[in-house]
Length: 222
Length: 307
Image 1 (spheres, rainbow over the protein chains, first blue to last red):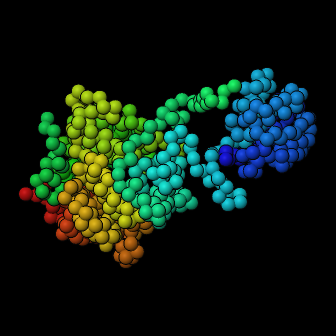
Image 2 (cartoon, rainbow over the protein chains, first blue to last red):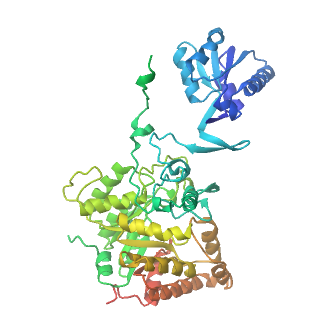
Image 3 (cartoon, each protein chain N blue to C red):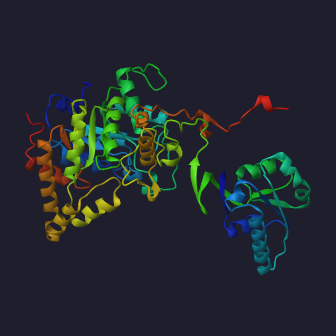
């Protein structure tokens, strides 16, 4: 999923300051799962903003709505009426959701209420870890399904570097060395020979380095 | 200009090599480089020039290497893949060769979060293994990474780092073999304080036939104090300072610390000279270049090179 984290309330108050009628628009898929932008977070944030404005004797009207996904048109349209009635939208979706709304409502300011952090998983309840960079050219088959591009601090394809000690990364003792994990797993799978050969430089053209990406599925274009 | 570096010549002749290190200044002051060059000249066969080590901005390793050449020292230019993409790395290799730099040490580089500008974007377009192969292909095939035939390709003597003290231990020898395959002619190791572990590592490397394929320069760093020993153990990535070494440094009065540190260093060098598969030493006297001459002399490694 896309993992996100709500922005600090002070920053949110600052960016919504010019508006009198605000729609807080939640997103019911990824950011709901990571407790950043679902119905519950929309309601809590709305109360916090109302309180903060009241304390400063300022007025603001807040509407609340959460759609299933802000990155899909059919769900976005469910919010169209509400969007039209407000001065601005505070979207609690990931960066894709914020931009999807903005593309469809050219005259309405759309503001981000969360910071999109990464593509990851919920490792334990409340603990999320980054697992994928969306490089567009998956090499997990070689690395025992552990991504060195994402999980090695130096993106090494022929690691580990000299800073790996006791399974930890030199950057921070809280970071597991991806290469220790890769070697352990390939050893267990009997595939350590994957690493004896030189793994050539990555072709980054399929990543963001190649410019903004677009995927066209001719078979699905109506 | 001969293509063969002094370091390569000495190693090829089977002589025990000695290299030193020069960290470029945090500024454009070339006098510091000249001062360090004068301290090292005649006592080492080549001098490593670090590339923004610990991710702190310093004079570039290319420029500092060029200044060293002028001052009469042969540089080993370090190059890390942290700050430059493949286009920039190759371009700088061409530039370095054009300035008479004949040795290169290919490294990943300390992560930028260790440095003074942790907000920086890192690059890591290619890794140190790729950089080794790139320099080798430039030299042996005369081609850049795109396959383009270079006009006067650089023909460098290629070095890589190895850390016998990093984990997983068993994999360290496999990685050494990969580095040799990728293009390493010589290896410089992390500073050795844990002689047992180093001996185990080089024995494995020797059994794999790797010490016949590559020159291994064993790294040593003289300790200045027990505080430094503890700092190295706890704060420096990839370092292994056994408790016995710390105890020994703690066991002498403060004013004798430096003397004891040099004594330990000399004992290590003596053991390394007896170790099968070690072709030389790399002395990293961190901001203590004035001690290199003393160490090399007391170790009986002068005049350079030993005949």
